[in-house]
Image 1: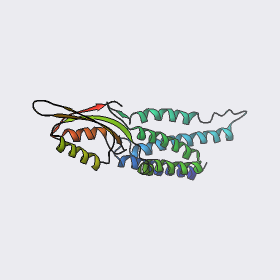
Image 2: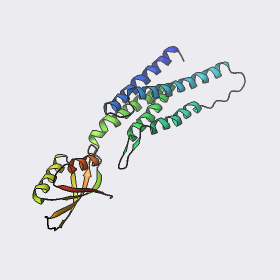
Image 3: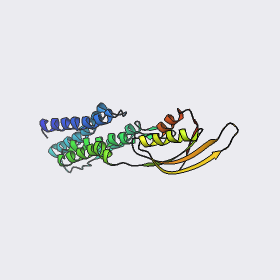
Image 4: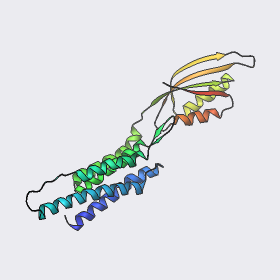
Length: 224
């Protein structure tokens, strides 16, 4: 393997990982350009090192030579799992960072493929990663069904506000249960919405928005 071969693989690893990292950083994810470049370069360097060691053993080894390909890069893949886990944030109601963790892991795999010089696999792999992260989300709309209980006063005014809110954010109402509690101070209305959320709509964001409305007395999440 010549010096130019090594430099080509290093440059490719830097460019491809940098583009993927830019997409993650542009979306304000914890692992950005620098992280993805370093991960890809590290994985690529181990693959290059393993190939150089193999060439050296075959060229200068005396007697029978036993080769165990993949031992170094296997340790890289295992170690990247710990780095990816650091990008995952788990809260009471949500898990974030799984896609970034997966992108860090697949960038390590991409670095290994580049390091081994299998460009016929590296290029389509790189393009597939970009399509998955950038383009696929625009066409693939995965809904999440949630239930939300809302108690409020002033039925006509508040019902109109809720309808306008859900319509403006393209939140689909799959089912609605309604009840009323008659009190001396006025009726209290309860509606249980079964809503279908798309990718860009935050369930907690909806609760925060609705809680600011003066007529709303209570908002409660219901486990589906």
